[in-house]
Length: 81
Image (cartoon, rainbow, N blue to C red):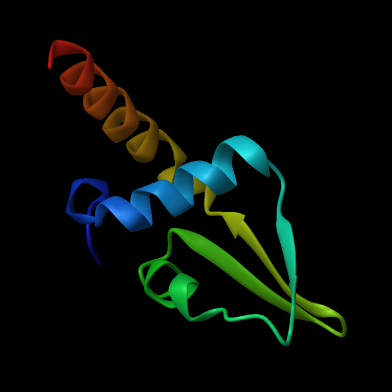
């Protein structure tokens, strides 16, 4: 499994969106493209649950602190530039 600092910028942005905009979970219909979540689900950063109306995605609790640290480090580096 990849560590938070090994995730791509797009994957980090996806996780940060989930974390800040949808703190509990989001529900996506079956007919939507779910492929961009696959790597994050495989690595355990996002939990996926299937329902009759679609799939729900939520942040995995065990990775929240590590992602917060990476986000803080990136923000600090961006502020220095």
